[in-house]
Length: 108
Length: 120
Image (cartoon, rainbow over all chains, first blue to last red; front, side):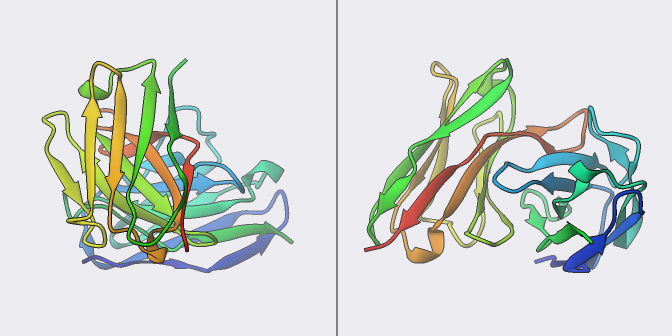
């Protein structure tokens, strides 16, 4: 089983700042790597697929990068609506999926 | 409008069974791979199962043998039949659509979720 470890667990930043969220996998994975945003009381929303591709309607301030075992979600110029929990996901162990434990992005 | 609506959650005693439904609108569940994901209170996301357009299903080890995913194409609805439930199955259960060609098997649409509480 591939384990996804997200860091930090909590990130405290102010609007306008840049957020860098990390996800490390226990084994090298393919580019089938995604990021989701979940706001309190809501369902998750797909942000990034295939490591670096933004989903439909996702603003350009969200970007993804990485390869192998280290992946990053960057949110530039944070907006108030960006404060939420973010999850990474991998599909390398087809047909099963796994998620990271989440990073909470909170307002400082 | 394209959406997914889950129903069927509730309070169930340990050892009991429950069936969740996920009604789709705006697309056909028969033409998409569909999946279930759950989230225990205050916890992260856990993948539960997937059903392919071929009707082939796969499950997480934590639910294998106890949960069954199916669909009714005439009702455009996905189901999750859960049995031998334990407190560890307490969670919000989401159904989601698997986006294949455009977004490489990520989950591009989610329902609002339905809460399942297993307690005596």
